[in-house]
Picture (cartoon, rainbow, N blue to C red):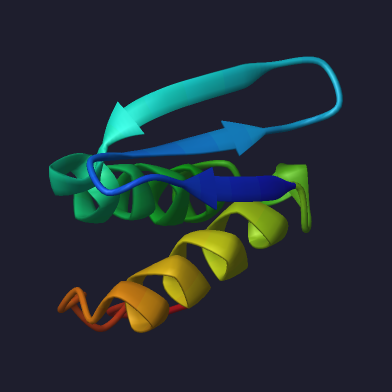
Length: 71
């Protein structure tokens, strides 16, 4: 998972897809991937790279993110 950003957006690029979102949506996307990992445990570690990348970007940008309830 590659995550890049500008002042107003961030782009997530996977092997077969890419998506660009407003920085304001960072916590929404992080919550989505955390929820997917919880809701679909058979996916194993499929969502970990996205979650780790989004958490790293939030830290870099100083964006407050909620703690994960039960990872």
